[in-house]
Length: 446
Image (tube, one colour):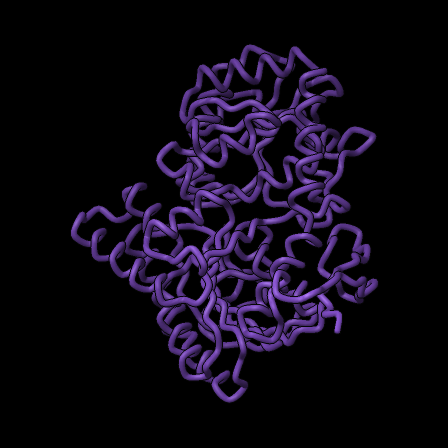
């Protein structure tokens, strides 16, 4: 099967959409499919083009069995509403030649990743010209989020953007997203039920797993053996609402047995560092290489997942999968009835968004109760193993891709079975330690 993936972000970005797009492309390539990607040079979450790449020049490369066409884009140093729009538009325009180059290749599926939805018209045009099936995968409802976060301040502009979003989404053969509630939102925007598909983010529990020792980061950060670590790891942007963590750290500064560690980069990191500059119980780290991700997640005694209440159902945080897999206790900030609340409520502690007092209370409760921390950690680990494994996710994805192009009957229409395809060189899972993984594909029984 020939699959073209069109999206802004891609590896070697370590967090967010780029990480998952790359792992999906690599997994499909490992299963024997011809996968090509049109993307931008890596820049996220630092908002700076990575060393070894340029923002102004196209580039072709092969990464782990996937052919990449990297198109130029402009990256603002301080992203704002207008600058973000110009940033996205620069890639949408500059990537058109790379898309046009694939007309004669004739992909069978053209999958575009949102963000950014600005790419959707070109993806639809390519699928129309080549008679490919069109697929929109939504990691983030960016129009809704931009409006709620104040990046779209004009109500008229917001209504136009939402109307254009609905018009575009209804024209894709498949619209997938990472949670049930995000799928429901897509249906509410006009996507047909039969065109929707649940494609959750995943975590490899053989790469992320609980260590039987203390993390090496304790020594590197000069954190005592018996000090409880509250860890936030991920993007530091507006929608994370990280200011609540600074206020909570200040409220718990009298507790010498609790330290807050912030690991990541992003637009609001400098502001967060400034707010925590006088607090003795705060440490800051940059994003760590993937080889040290398990070591990092095991640094936590308690993971914290803050989130602004107005975006809780727009974004299902991908970092939650790694938190669960590490078998550490999780505290999430979410409104009742949201997908995040439902995912964490029996596997951790949920507190109202932007509520410093409740977050501090939850942290102190878990610090004082090691048995409860262990219970929540075990429940999260079990959920990750049973529901979020890449083998299960990619088997369903491949089946859906084949049914969409008509190259494979749906399972209910024909007898089928799963066969082992064995260890695959350059398989994308797991990356830590580069151990091989067994993937599966569907084989028809005649």
